[in-house]
Image 1 (spheres, helix red, strand yellow):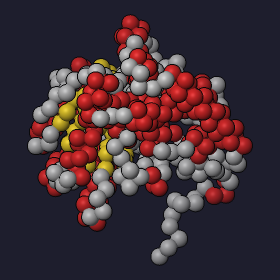
Image 2 (cartoon, rainbow, N blue to C red; image 1 turned 30 degrees about the vertical axis):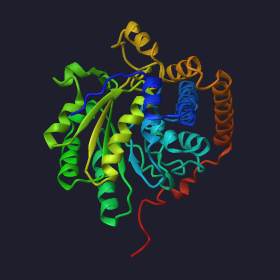
Image 3 (cartoon, helix red, strand yellow; image 1 turned 90 degrees about the horizontal axis):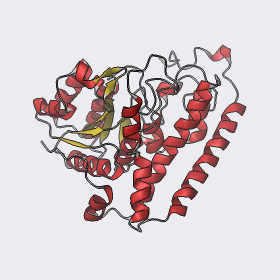
Length: 339
């Protein structure tokens, strides 16, 4: 089992040949996630959106780093905190915001909401409101790719808490036994909803569980987009080579509460803890190191921020103008009309 901890991003990038274009790609994916989630959080707190949102702010490096290794033909399954995965995989702001507003132009025509956004054209099989439910779906997708021989792989995202769920163990065992092309990515943000990891398992590393199924694993710095990219690249290469599944555990942190921005419960984390993680913000980390090393100029990053904010503003206006579903269509796509 490899335990690759928090290495210096640009040092490792240089050693592995990660060029300026690749760094800019990682940055753009992370900024798009941050802007989307920030604006969505504001809308939720203002009461403009129905239901609750589980924001991905703070964990951007994991989705960006992982998705940088995939093509549209590769499939992913997500979690209740799934906006980041969708955005990093290539989902567009307009149908995403429309879905959050429950409008017809949404990815699910307003029927899925925050936790069920999917886009099969880019291999996004959907987020899932049930903890651990995406794991066996990804194994099924990997099996289908193996059976067809199309060269595709599947990547499934889950949290530390989900590794206690039976579906995780069943999925890991089946994937290992059948040597399926699937990568298990644990986004370990230290909390299963409100419960710290130390209170729900006796392990420091969730990746240790992979060895029970004869599966190689690696731990990486989940606040470092390049470290994630390189760790997932090794697992993806193994999957594409027909060597079976791997697990990558990314140590990361969510800035907001389990739901929304302001939170629904009394504080269970100290402000000191939150501030400590924010000092290693993934986007700021990439920007500062790239500028300091002369890899990319600051104005390039500022342009990405400006373009992304404009994209979000346009998408929100689009979503607000999108028509609401017709109540007469309530049973549409619920039952098949084919015999």
